Image 1 (cartoon, one colour):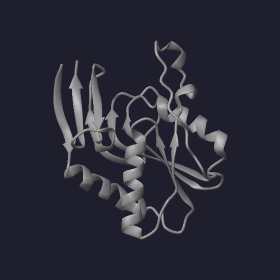
Image 2: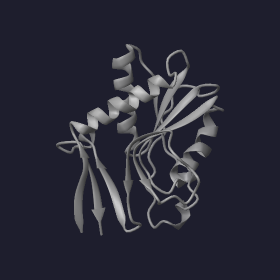
Image 3: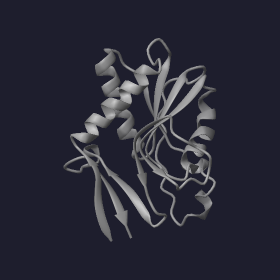
Length: 178
């Protein structure tokens, strides 16, 4: 197994700042916007996005955590199921939802998240923001509106995102070849 570093600080902070600038350019101001991070690692990225947007716009955005494990079409096929908690303390009805995840690969988790969001209301608009887009790996026709970095990967490769909030000493994104 080999590891190749894709992204780390300070380039990661620059990438997050750039993504926030794109969100601002696309009229995030003046709309009722909420941010939903996909469990497990998308929540750390969502909190970073919300903090940076708050810093740049001098305001705050509600941030929620969404677990779509039981909405996945393949969850019964897995040997182990490790669900996380969903924590959305606000309504998403008629709001602009920024769905945030760390890695977009097959698109199945995003499809499941869209299904899971229906339990909390019908948003006016949903936009997808991802840190890493594993292009050429889609099973479903799902694309992100905001992408930190696109990476060409083989089906045998994996992208691993390590956040300081998880206990790592630094933020790092690795391409792992098995």
